[in-house]
Length: 506
Image (cartoon, rainbow, N blue to C red; front, side):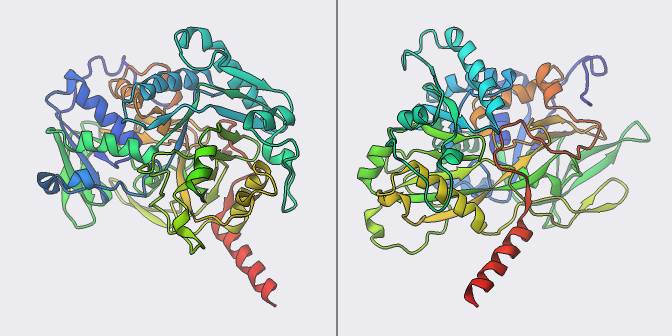
């Protein structure tokens, strides 16, 4: 694995200008860390993204009404906040982040600590057990003064324990031909000190703080390639900035690539980062239903990947009205004021696309998996529906109520589920900050500090964990938290669905 060492760079000098391409979690957290560090007091910081406000717009405070781009994976109603990891390093970092969430660092009424139920069947049980041990071992040290539940973790040894902790009737059963044990799991635990955050609300708060900062320059534009210059080494080149689709350019001493699932469209990340599409649906609720469900914990099944996040009662919350999805026509739509989020954290769907990447000496045609505008595949909707039918009693109208909307969320996946935060091994002054793998958002309050340490070549265990791997990975196993059987091709699944529709109409 490649990462610059202190030996080869004995003294770090902060760059006089930094350009961040992208405006998601990695960008915002890193920008916060840069703005908070006296070491970078003289550094000019520019953020480039096709969906952010132009710098001139800030004069009339239009940024205060700015709606973050739906292209950013973390712009959504909610994200799980948990230290429940099989890897102790991530568990420690998530615990550090969670303390910041509790302090209100990302806005008032953003973080909700309702508890997290983690379950699994045979598949995923090893991850569940390791995660449970990690949160149990960290309880006394980290939560000595925690004012919440007296017992942080409760083990759930059978399906009846799972139903009881979720408040489900003992006769809760599957419909539509699915197995209840498949969707509710066989064993697991509840961590009373986990929860969820209003993702869009948090991102809005951080964006406003950064975008209105006097040291920030915003550029609304789309990057199509990097600019290269020669170095003292005949075999190496340096990235000196970016070229935009309108043919203009922008230079900087250091360029940070933080475009998430779109990163493989600008630099060759074959075998290192790829976009996978994950499925999300929203179930409309009345205020009375929302009031009841808001008390339930988050449920995450690591065998299937399906999870459900309870609604917030704050009507102004994006979780109450997901504005990022096109709603379907519904009866009595005016009666529904809130939504329940149901989604899947799986191996996902691949959508290979053709891109031309510019190198210092030529162009290269590649076919990486990139974000797609495809609708949610019918099999994924059916799986989420079956999941709901296990959570709610058959007599409940929620079990069969149509979803109001659905959409895809695109992860920037890596083969191991570890982030990719490192200097590019071939191009000087290009820093990669991507590979969130569907679990980066929870680290928003603290991630940037770790990124800076790696930039300054003193990243320690994080530089090793998030470094550039010399070999291109062929097998993508993830970190063990992904449900489902295997990754699938989006085009193949959608074509199969269309053929099934044709046959059903014959």
